[in-house]
Amino acid sequence: MLVLISGATGSLGFRLIDSIISRGHQVRVVARHPEKISAERFEKLEGFVKAMSYYDIPAIEKACAGVDAVICAYNGAPYLQLDGQLIPLRAAERAGVQRFLASSFCGDYRGMQLGEQDSYDGFISFDAQARKSSSINPNYIFTGALGEVLFATKDTMDFSTKHYGPWEPENKRFEVWGTGDEKWHWTCEHDAAEFAAQVILRDDAADGGYWCVSSGTDSLKQMAKTYEQVRGVPAKLDFLGSVEELHALALDGQRDGSPKAMWDYIGRFYYYHIVSGRWDMKTLDNEKLGVWATPLEDFLRANPDI
Image (cartoon, rainbow, N blue to C red):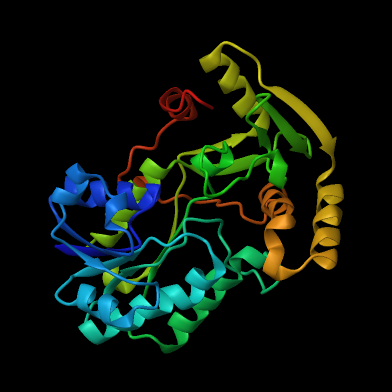
């Protein structure tokens, strides 16, 4: 099978390339910056189509020609969530492609209304538009928080305490809203790519659907305990208030801020929707997809800077 990955020049995209190729399939990439892909990885590609921008329709149509499946690996920028994904979806339709994996890798937004989580409005809108107007039935993967984002290892997205996330990397401590016993679904990028590969290569991938997966489901108290076991040093827990108090602060930030500058307040909504249970995934598809998930202990050992 030949799989096109759109926007495969980020860390998750690299892992998607590896996961597809490791299963004996071919990968083609359409992206702006071929130089971001290592020479070793680039040599394994079936092809690379250079695009000038996310709306370079001729390049994306060229990339879709002859492929069996499309994976969209764009980041969470609002214009990429909606505009950016509709373009490869329409190109895939014209090329007769039936297998499509949307760029989700997020919390389970089903049932949410626009404006509840400003950073998910594009995901929700793309999902609705595809459902109403496309001949393709996309697949969506809900992963909870990506482990690399949760522990602030990525330069591209800072969910540390500076942006109202739970982990402060400098002082190795958690800021806790609630009791600290609330569950956090998290998935490392390696596992996210493995789950994605299994989904897009399934015999029924053209049927589309929603997939709930995670590497682990741990409370902040459990994470702190595991951190101390692995590192030999404690991770402090600082309790800031109740879940209701967090929600009030999030709403205040949204009211006083602007959706165009949502990153000034959106972290509190991420935190709130996790600890309130809004994004709880009661049934996981890990076993159905046959992926061995990475335990938190192994994730921490693989990331010594955390």
